[in-house]
Amino acid sequence: MRCEAKKALAVAKLFALLLACCAGIAAAQGYPAKPVRFIAPFPPGGSTDFLARLVAQKLTDAWGQQVVVENRGGAGGTIGVELAAKSPPDGYTIVMGHIGTFGANPTLYPKLPYDAIRDFAPITLLAMVPNGMVVHPSLPVRSVREFLAMARARPKQLLYGSGGSGSATHLAVVYLELLAKIDLVHVPYKGAGPSIIDLIAGQTSMTITGMPALMPHIKSGRLRPIGVGTAKRLAVMPDVPTIAESGVPGYEATQWYGILAPAATPRDIVARLNADIVKVLQRPDVRERLASDGAQPVGNTPEEFGAHIKAEIARWAPVVKASGARPE
Image 1: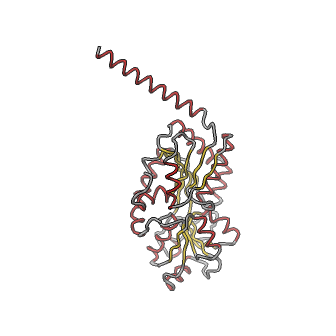
Image 2: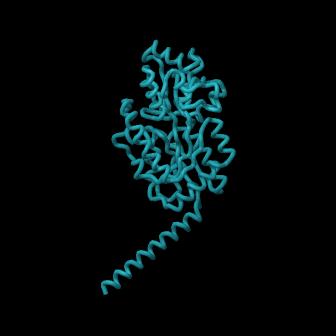
Image 3: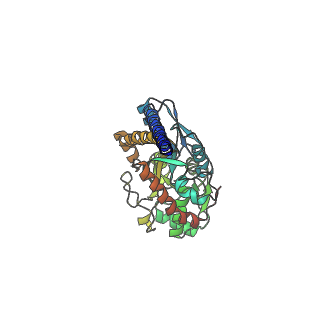
């Protein structure tokens, strides 16, 4: 009797597993059946917002269902990311993650309200985005070397804006300060967008942030590019040297962006999201749009993206500690 009971239990478990699989497949086949919320954890105007809206529009066109970008800025992106982590894991909430929220924040915040690994299902690494170093046109410098000379002559006088304490922008400038042995004044904002607005207004002198947010202002002449944070010059701005070749050997700081869903989102839906987003990244118009800002589309597997996040947390931990940055 005991043997028969064990067999019956095993059959029941197998049947339940088959039902779950069938339900997951059915859910994925009918997905999405309603609008999808896409959380951008920073204010409008930055690279996070730009990339989220680009992908959202293409997914809306492909699905016939609205993908609504919801800007939830504040606390270095933690407010929006925490909201995503606590949302129902049904595929109808996704979030834009990047080097700050998923690379630096796990070290920066002693009590981070989300776990970058445990609380999320990675979907795909979206793009690698180069950083640009720009100054207000009124600042009498036209190169990184000239900026460094001014900074050394005027320690603790030149102001730079960032997307917040410990943000990717903040760490990129701290890295420059450490290598170039300069001392600037940090002005944190609630996102790269607001910091760029104040830079254009002349409230600060310089910033280093993602090219997608900078390029419109560079083209309009409202900001002057003097360097890029990549290992090689950008094809879109071949006359602008790298920071490394401009007197700061070894300097390299780029950003990355990827899409995630709450943990426990059905694997079939994660696979559907991955496949459809990768298709978006393969579109010639999307690749051309990203390339115009020097960005490189990626589109890898959920497993590869998950491994990338773990590696980035380990990579940026010592930089965050060296920066002395504290949560806002």
